[in-house]
Length: 242
Ligand SMILES: [Ca+2]
Ligand SMILES: [Ca+2]
Image (cartoon, rainbow, N blue to C red):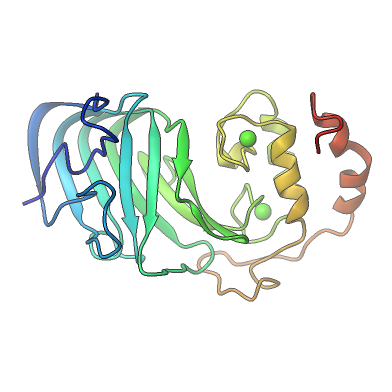
């Protein structure tokens, strides 16, 4: 029997635990998610369904263990049948040195309806060229993690001009990875393009990785010109810092 909400909805301290679970309040599933503080390295991923509504407060968050691609056995998955309101911190813990193939997807949250986003993320970095990025409502309502190359906004396995276009369209107005928030700080601005620039033309193939899904395409040589000409001019207040 799964344990909700305390074990699933990670409270960083009891005093700051402002997560509210309401509605039918029936939790079922196997194992528990996010037990312990912090969870041990030998934790056990689980899939749990909560038959109500869950609201995550700004001072709290949710914790997910990732050790494989299969929900419930490889990684934590929480299904909320009601409304899910997100805020606070998304805390990821990669177990046992797991290194997913590029573009592997992990549906960690499934919701009847969803509003809000996690405002910060920890534990997303697998290594310098691979991280788990949050993508909302990718496979139905909820949250999916995608194993991505830094800067790959459209998640096609290559960092190129198409990702620059995504960043441009999201500049100063959007707040998600697919819109150009490459450093995952909730803002799309000049700092993100530095991430994109440092990984430009990297692909799953060039990194020696195995791709899941659509695979990599050929980079566009012409993008380098765009980088040199205009990008640094879009770094507000960074003169002398970068
Ligand atoms: Ca791309
Ligand atoms: Ca950003």
